[in-house]
Image (cartoon, rainbow, N blue to C red; front, side, top):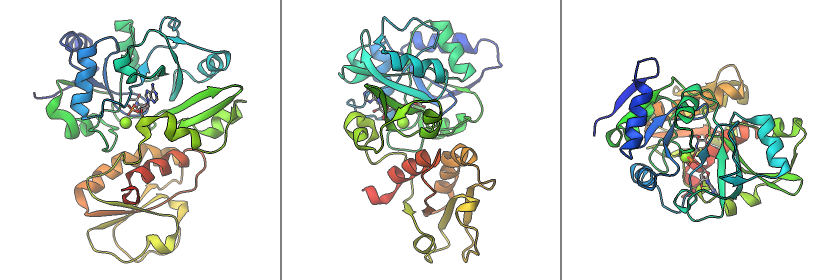
Length: 324
Ligand code: TXA
Ligand code: MG
């Protein structure tokens, strides 16, 4: 198959997406977090194709994407606090693990719960609106590899297995949605993501500290993930990070304020020269993709675990060699 990159400005793009779904073929679509590989949640064949294209293990369930103003009661059971979260943060990068009703086992890998989210990206929303039915969409990358934040990154990774990618430019957030689960009057963060714990707290939601709930509940947060094609090593101190290596090594820091002193080696880049974590998240997968094409190894200095820094460090930890 050879992939066509569709511009959402070209006439007929939406009809082509619909036609592809009628053929049970998933389509890569932009969201405000990362590009997703989308298919109707009710189409077992198309959902099967998603697993095939990504080479994703069948036990790893898929996020169900909806529009926030739909009646969700046929699909899931929502409690009061879940409804409040939706009211406050949808559309946007917040996903909720909730009790499912009418969502197939082939979407949730047999689990009694489903993860739902309402994306903010106008292109994804237009497709949902046209279909009037939920779409599943994992990130549009080969399983365990870097998440794509541009249409070109999708093409370079899984393009040979796809019919269409809709180009929506580069994704605003650059890291995936935050996945949470409500328990009693509190919220567990199951995956750190674009919506920070601080933002949830500031809005008055009580967050359970720590990460213990995460691995048990979200099978997809397996350790090895988001990995570039060359080894990535992660360091929490400048001294360890700045050990001499070869010319084929890239030294990457997250914020320019993470280390401001002199640096002895030539290949150094910074994800955010403005020291803004949002810039860093936006650039994370894009810079790692460029780095894997140019260097033999990547040495990264961890940033502080505050705000979006948690999601950035989380992705870097899973991408790093220490977890093998
Ligand atoms: O920002 C995002 O959430 C992006 C965009 C495309 O929407 N999607 C995304 O999907 O990151 P994916 O499949 O790459 O990551 C979804 C994570 C996986 O770790 C998966 O295991 C977990 O959510 N997940 C999905 N449904 C689940 C369920 N029913 N129970 C437990 N974990 C679930
Ligand atoms: Mg993913």
